Image (cartoon, rainbow, N blue to C red; front, side):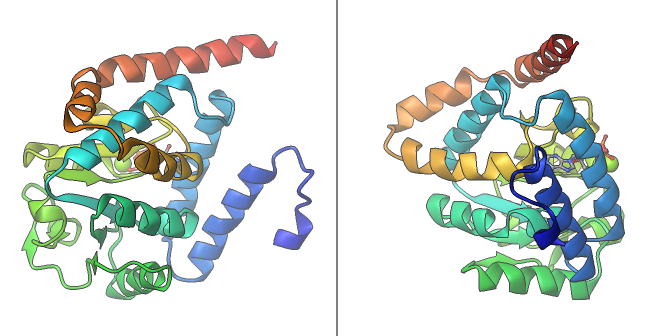
Length: 250
Ligand code: ATP
Ligand code: MG
């Protein structure tokens, strides 16, 4: 289908993203529910004008500061993230020296394997998830599976497009949770330590770039960014930016 969408199409980026999710489903990387999640995301992306807002960018900066300060950061990859930004996830893992862990909502061993293989094809060196050896407390068995070397013992976890219950369970374990979620009202957005209200296809390239820029900062400077960050305020600003954008339209 890619040949059928001309680059001059006003919503080219959005259509490309949709196509990648469809290809993810066809290739056994993304579950069917991933299509529905993408649809929810797209609707909200319209509301913020399909651009990174200033609140989104502040959350992205705080996320990198937190990841650079982390002792054991881990990047979690699900079926939608694997379809949309596999290369950027591997690139970010490299820059902040973190492993990746495949962590999918509708778990099948085959899909976990396919996602892990995909990440390795993009150069992922430490990729976990195929051999879970523990469970996250408070979740039912299939959703609780985790790896001690990865998410289970991490202090900071980046979980883009995460489910609300799992986000809550990770926070209850005492972890700092960074998410990317276009819905500022979702349970995930409210539970997370840092919520990046942006499309994952814009957020990940931004995060990779910020990791390069910010690794020059001192520990004190990074700590000041994290300490000055207020997630509730960022969610409120995200909603205000949505309202402002909508009001400008007509
Ligand atoms: P809750 O967190 O309340 O359980 P939910 O059930 O809608 O909300 P999930 O399906 O568990 O959430 O997670 C998907 C979330 O990711 C949705 O909030 C959706 O808006 C968002 N989303 C989907 N696609 C993208 C994308 N490309 N970029 C950013 N966010 C996205
Ligand atoms: Mg949910």
